[in-house]
Image 1 (cartoon, one colour):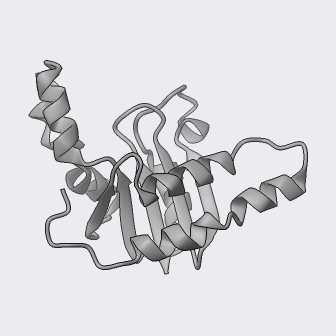
Image 2 (cartoon, rainbow, N blue to C red):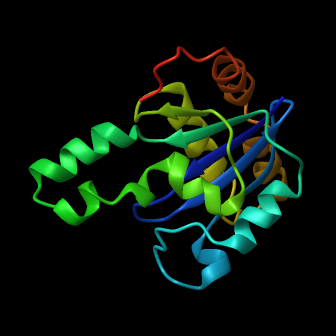
Length: 154
């Protein structure tokens, strides 16, 4: 099973591809755009991630309607009423029309993002990097995310 993990539309957009319980690609958007804390995914990073094949499941970090509720109470009305920052609409520009599974902080999906982003940091020891990429929690996270989603995903 191939999972495409995405985090965007906030600070530090990131992409992670997990295939058969192994991280095969993980990167932050700023590495491609050269914009510090880039909140947006760009075509270069998405092309690289999608070069590993069509994902079986797309996992988006954060629940969009919960985020819009927070933005409403914070007075960020332009964000609240912008439909293009809803993940399903946002991903259309990358030709991704899959059913998206939304995960929130503290969930198993957020563990996937934490593990994958840790594997990006430079390590003085190549063996440490390999250990992070083959982290034992990846199998547990992947199998939990692979379960069928309930019909309401927001």
